[in-house]
Every structure is written in structure tokens, then in C-alpha cells.
Image: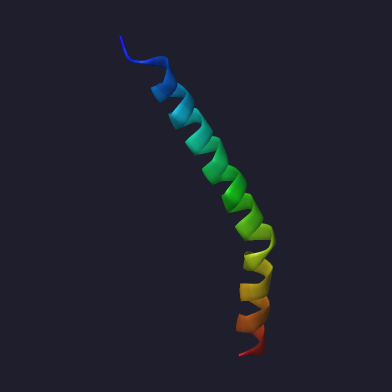
Amino acid sequence: MREPWIVYVVVLGTVGAMLLGKFWMFGGGERDNSDKNKK
């Protein structure tokens, strides 16, 4: 039987990565697209 805290770390890590990915998509993603259009 695995330790409970391992499950929490995995879940929090996955959710955190998804949230960070969304922020990068909305924030940095638009900036990258604008830079490509300018070039």
C-alpha cells in the first residue's frame, strides 16, 4: 500500500502543470504568435 502523501503530490503536480500550461497558452502563447506574425 502506497503512502497517501505520494498521491497528493502527484495530483497537485498534475493540476499545477495543467494550470501553468493554460496560463502560458493564454499569456505567452499570444505573444509568441504576434512575434511570428511580425516576422
